[in-house]
Image (spheres, rainbow, N blue to C red):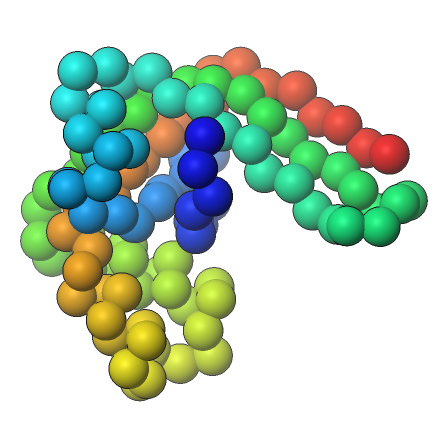
Length: 107
């Protein structure tokens, strides 16, 4: 697993990346993926969900840019800055992960 920025919509995780990354290359031969999302660093606010599911690469340029913009909007107040634009321009694919099995935890 690798830390990523994501957006969750319609029961699916969307993760922006580049086709040169290991995670994108791995999906070319195996469409199974694992995930872990956790929140909080101090008890009693620690909780999360982990699981596995099927994944596919979205490669259509217009769709990639639209979804990547949504993802980056979760982490930036505006996409009108150099860092956001650099990430947006480097994103050439989106991983769409559909969870099939998962478990939750809370401490």
